[in-house]
Length: 308
Length: 263
Image (cartoon, rainbow over the protein chains, first blue to last red):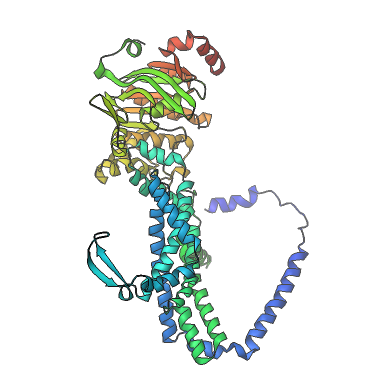
């Protein structure tokens, strides 16, 4: 360590003396943006209609927290459903069996081709199409019969609507990931005697993840916000809860700000999670992983500690 | 020369190809290949690119299916089963079963980039044969040591040089304890100064009596290590014999023309 420190300055030749390039454009941009930001802050602080007091009083209110919780589990559950079903669909689409790839294509065609708002409403209204559902011999006698109003409560309708729609999108993302893996990888795996399933699970999917994770993070963030649509089912997630406070108290605008703040906070948490997952799947594709922000902070603290 | 052309006893034959044909669409890539590789023999296959050498190699472990003719390894038909005078295509799992015993080394290494060198070597014995991790780890470590990489087991492929990667790939194939090793231009993607280390490992394998089919452009290796040299051009075997003979006194005009370009 000390050797390199003493040798460094001696070995390095004197730096070139040159006038650096000036950037007048940057300064102009700074001035313009600073003025705009100042105007925005001024209006937010001085305009009474923002009702910051009201927002502060209600942002952690019980129904809002309940809505946040519902939004969170709905996002996680719908994404899980989307990813699992998406993997199945992607593998089906890439299967040499034309019936499997055709069915997967049809599924994607239907669920990607109709608005998710319409799908959610259909799930919520399914009871008006089928009064009851029975399990039994196809076209024959039924053993168990359910009333659809009890079978599809609003939570399930919300989850089905979001999850099945998401699966169509996820399957295309995962298919792209699988196709991005070099064919030599599956060849090497088959040459070693690995089966198709083993090759997929052990060799292809882990490598596909590197391509799959960034758009999946995107989908998750998008899903978090799409959950606001299930208020039509109706299902009481975050936006439903803040809207009902808004209509009850006639403070519509502040409740919109409240909802936005919550969505922003949750999205930020998701972005941190995405960073670490991406880093995990970069293993082996880069020679050395860059340090995480935490590691960087720790290194900086250690360095300043040494100096002292 | 004697073993390959003279027709060895059936139990001494590792690979036998009879009138093997292969088409890619309308392209006729293999036009009736007849070939025998004896047990413990090292056969080097040379020829211009597009002559069908790699395709032949890939037919031997059924990465490509043969369109006509018969190809067998160790007395067993590859990819098909004969029952009542009729050929039946094998299920994928049965083909996988056959491939366990045939090691293959690729031109572009094809190591699994998300696993360390040691994990690459351990993967197939653990997953395919279901051997215990402890025993496999020991054997994998020994194999890495044998190819001169005993201390690089924790490295990912991207942290290794081309020559090191190819040696890990050889260790990975050996971990399945194959009875036959196929090499598909194993040094063609390497920088010239890294070729030697890979050839050294292959030379060691040959000395231990491994049966090897090597598609290569390394004439020096073919002359020194090969028992037989096969020259292929345009989907046919043009000439075959003792490498020292063929390389010095080629019998066919096409062989002569090719050798004059590469030697």
